[in-house]
Image (cartoon, rainbow, N blue to C red; front, top):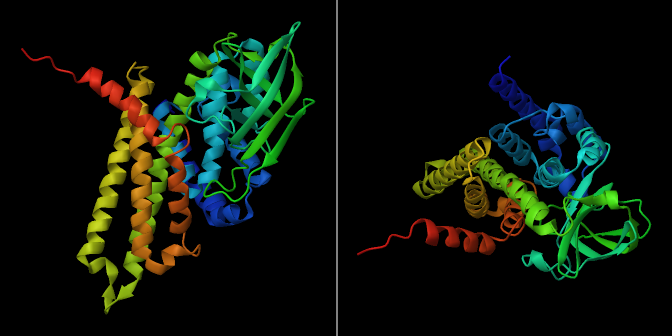
Length: 381
């Protein structure tokens, strides 16, 4: 079987898996505020937690195009379940693949793939979000070891993670460390009352005099931001870009299905031109969003240097249209869209999160503007 056919078959199987194992329970996950361990184990058995990893580490070796499509499939069924892929595979897994040494890769990647260890990416702090270069979590050298002190907040899957990829600073050096949950001095506190991602086990982490070995350093000391964070956020933004497509597609399908069922003034509401206009706009926006993601995917596949900015553009656009399409889906549902009997209520909440995580829309605007000012400047005589 060719690589293309093999990857296509994986996505087709994932569609069925999501339809049977995830989508029917998405509202339940949201209400209970937890993703069942049983589902995580099933996803691991399918290879989804290591979808983009090389086969030697237990991965499916999906290229960027098919990994994006997998993210859409899972994300359309449940945003919190998709968040596990974003963290486990993209933020942590891909970063370990790029910057981990031989021992770190051989130890952690197979465990991630089998779902035996859950990972979390610990960058954001109580007072540090977009200003990621100025983290306050501290590390100090203690002989051949490091001592970590500080707090991280809003960390996805932190409350059940077995280890954390932690960004800390020592004077002017920002470095990255692998810290296991069972290390002395590590504690977590779940965060409740969230707008979205309620089942993604978001938590605050505290490190109190956590003593770790030199083998815990990921990448070069002082390269925590330039190398590790930039790599992680690029892969994370790619995953979130597809998450926007997933929400938009789910909202379109919910909007169309309801419009074909709901009757007002003696006819199904899809007959009304204003409803047709909303559907037309939603379909167009979703198709455009997917096209941007596919362009970024092809650039990533070819290792084109423009891949990073194309990923940023895709993330910015899809997060915006996800909210717009989800909002229109709520509008089409009317009063029904304001209760959790229908999925659009949850999709609307989840869509807003995408404009904040992995770099706010305003941060993406700054990056894209800087690119545009340089790329499209035409000197005139």
